[in-house]
Length: 232
Image (cartoon, rainbow, N blue to C red; front, side, top):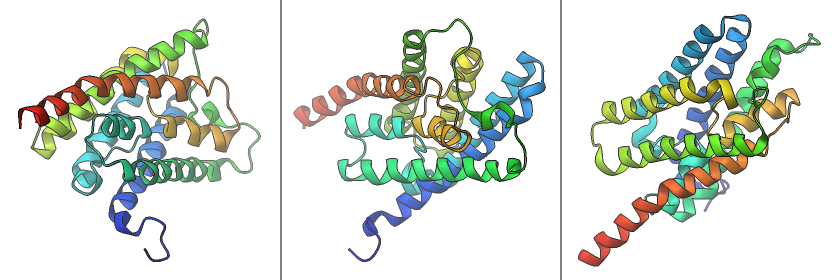
């Protein structure tokens, strides 16, 4: 085993760590930068940064770990039997570590300030959106995102097409839901900024919603897997 707890999957863990680090670093930074900009322009900018970063990470890291960079995507792959169960814990652990390090990297720029813009990119519900409605929206968004990820894994072979599918899906989902929930669909993406800024408002929404969405997204792919095994 060696000194590293998961020595047999160091490459995969490193890939998930780096990918999630840059996703949260660039994504949360885009939220901070656009905090004082017009709503529509800001939303398009944030969606472009998040979607573009996901697409880039899929291109650069997909061959190493699948570039899940999201605990919900990892859970969906595991439930659908597309990822080994023994990779769930290391993937989620290093995704969380990457997100937290990215958020504290951003925190360094505001050490001597009493106000942290946009709570360092933390996600929160818009005025009028209840926690139950927030869970529903996050579940729907995560369902679509994880479905796209599973389609990319199962049926798309070219890396650039996988990157376009994943990045494009996240871009569109942020445009549709970003003004309501912040469009996280990623527990690590929400936990990192929340931990560094201390802004924990409605954090349960960003844990329960993505978990539910990932679970439902995996169901049809799991059945397809079972049917394939029966046919063989």
